[in-house]
Amino acid sequence: MSLRVAGRLVGAFVLSAFVFYGIGSALTGQFAGTMLVVLNSVLVAAIGGLVFRALRRSHPGSAWTYLAARGAEAFLLTAGIVLRDRVGTGAADIAYQVAMLSLALGSLPLCLALGRRRWLPGWLAIWGFGGYVLLATGAAAELMGVRVGLVLAIPGGLFEIVFGLLLLARGFAPSTVADPGTALDQATSAEADADGDSRASRAALAAGLGLLVMAVLAGLANFGVVERMASTDAAGTTTLALSNGRALVLAVVALCAVVCLDVLVAWALRAFFADTHRTVALLSAWCRTGYAVVFAVAITHLIAAAGLLRDEPATDRISPNVYAQISDFQEIWSLGLILFGVHLLMVGWLAWRSPSAPTWVAVLVAIAGVGYLADSIGALVSAAYTIEVAAVTFGGEVVLMGWLLVFGVRSRSQRRSNVDGLEARPAQLGAA
Image (cartoon, rainbow, N blue to C red; front, top):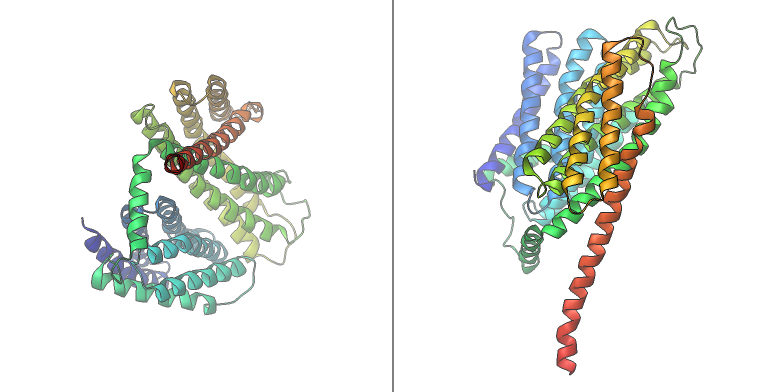
């Protein structure tokens, strides 16, 4: 498929998605409406895939970010319709606003990449960037209970209509003749793709930074909010401040970001270990991606809990329904950790086979995987299982994160030193 055809498909899907979701959301509670929303989600995911295919070589960071963001948006839009029927409008609204936040943040690097590639006129790329900033601001305000309506979403929505029409007319093609700078960028990108060491260092940095951000977000969301709420009395006898509803919404946003980062880290690790054993590296990436999907399903129960708190603002107690939703989140997440444990075992094996990774890093990562498997399978087999092995063995993940960051930084520094040395040698020869 050529870039022109791919771009035209993206344009058609962008415009069609507006129609399908608009009609589908208006037919709430009807089978036809649900099917239209599901079809909209399929188109949203397809848009992410087509854009990823077009940009993955020249702008891999933007391509992967947009793919993960569009995937999260597609999932959340469908989840919102399901939650509306099962829980209420509060949960559906939260799911929708988180979906819009994911779309907006994931589209910011896309606008920069399309502008740099001259696939969009400069003024349109700036319009898109500004529109998505406003969309993200509006979605964040709505999540915090500030009703700004559709005002901040209008610029971004109009951009997507113009963007879709432009792509439908000409596909992915430069708006003007490529200048030398663009050609230089493409040449540089091609050289970088041919450089295995450069790819490895970029993948290591991406995975390490992703793991670092995930650790912060997951720690704050899970231990700071979810665990504290789960420890309260199921009958709702423990009085809590109403601000817990907002805290739970923030936890949902943070954990949705963790899901996206899980996917990005999975494929960054696959790129890093691809030369060690391509098949095992691919399987490990799909295992973590599968875990991310299960984790996303678990998060829908937190969205339901936050929606219940939003629909019942008059109470300052946690209701049994909210508690049940939080418990369901923890149970489903625990099941997903089986896939995560398998992923860590495979990453440990890859690190042991890799000439770059120290043996002790491989061993600690594998031990971390065993810890997650022991806890998840133990809780599945027996309700009386209370041991938390992963609370001790999780250090392997921290070690992997630190080693990846150090490896990536050192590799980039060495590469720059080698380039500087090569540039200095002709000058020295000329002086001699």
